[in-house]
Every structure is written in structure tokens, then in C-alpha cells.
Length: 147
Image (cartoon, rainbow, N blue to C red; front, side):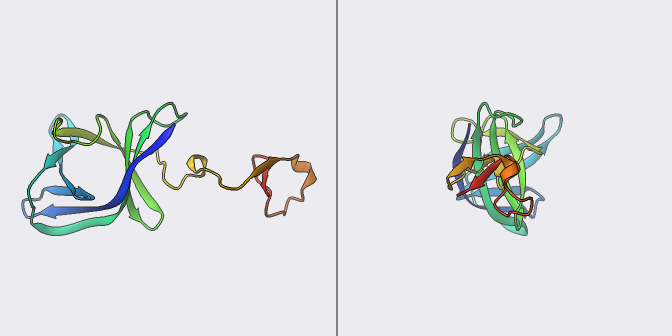
């Protein structure tokens, strides 16, 4: 099961001290590479001066449990361009008041924009594929057609 925890706008900047800062709808995190640990997000509660804007766009935060071929953790997806998303695993969720740091690991487990994770709003009817011409636009590979 995949649940959308939150979504909104993000901003990734770099400070004059070469520290990357990620802001997700007002919550700010330092994104650092910790020797021997890997990349981590650290909760930050102060204003940071921008030296360079690295990326801006939309984000989605998902909770995944029991989904085939997708890791059971929180997934943070950042929009990297038009219909281009980068997904990250958050091993212990986002940092907050109780937990100041969290590991963040890039992954190929992408959820946003994947048809298999999108709910179908149209009614689907199972009909034998041999009843349809191969050029029929309504024909679906899984044997379903839209009514």
C-alpha cells in the first residue's frame, strides 16, 4: 500500500559555506555527506543565506508498506524537470523535533507518474482481447478497456 504523506514545493540551495539546504514547504534541512555514514538530512531552524539555487520544484512524500518491488520505507520524490522525478529512501523518515538526523539514499523505486501506482478513475471491464482490432486505441495490454 502506498500512502501520500505530504506534497508541495521544495527548494534546494547551496550556502556560501558549500552546505546544501533542502526546504520542503517551510521545513528546512541541511543535506550533508557524513564520512562513513553517507548522506543525511539534519533539521535546521535558522535562516540560511543562499549562494546558489540548485533546484526548485514539487515534492511528494510517500509511505510504502507491502508493495511488490518497492522498498517498505518513506520515499521522498523531488521533481527534477518536467515529468522527471528523483526518488530517495528515508530510512527513519524526515528529521524533526525528536529525531534531528535521518539517512537519505537515492533509489530507482519511483512512484510518481508510474501508471501501476495511479488509481484508475474510469470504469474498467474485462473483455477478451481477440474481440478488438489491434489498432483500437481503447485496447489495453492487460486486457482491460475503458468504457
